[in-house]
Image (cartoon, rainbow, N blue to C red; front, side):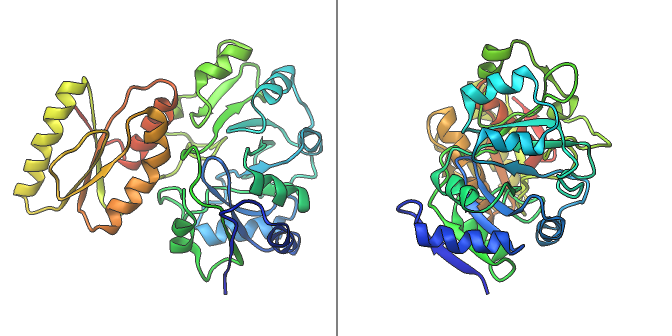
Length: 339
């Protein structure tokens, strides 16, 4: 039995206490953050964390992000906090930035995917912060079955986990819609492991140049130092094709692909910033912020509408567009059509 707690009007003290008791009891609680919904367990309880991997079908070497509500908690998790981490925390926490740091022994290896580093962030969502403060640091990947699009509505979590976990907190739609940016500060030079809700340009404005890990551009890796680096991610059941290039060329190519797939008897869905005459259409909005917020919802919605192919319009790879294109290319298995 899964308990769904309605907090669409904000953090409810009684509901938070109930959810916190489940966390402290080694159970699983799905909760909203400003990025996507997370599937949470006590980060310091190895048995509880193992249940996350079991519920999601997540590979054991795919590390989790630990969520905290106070900078002082970082010192309980990381044994070394460089000056860059302090500068970034002052500027961007609470917010969609995850920092990878050398871990303390108290953090179970299951939480870090067997690594000697721990990924930590402080979410900018009142429900998430209240839940952490009422319980403990919470390990929480996105609350979806591994490989599926991340959830931005409680309904998405219900679709994947109802009857499989103890609690789902419904906090309405998430604000950003793509996961946090992950920055590795455990080595000599800051390295971007995953673009996300905090644009790289803003990070570089605080600490200077940042290296980009080859996995961000699709290179396969043997060791995942961050979620989203090694395994299939964000994929609906339908085949996804991303169309990239100059805007006017993209427009023409999408129209051509719609006809091509239809001629083969396939139902075609399109997710884009302008209207197309497809079997199903999802309007992503006008701005990069709109596109990021609606991205995963579009993939899930078009899947529900029974399309065989989803054609996704590419966006410019800057600001939030960097994170959007990272997710789209992964969802498509790097099936990219250049226009």
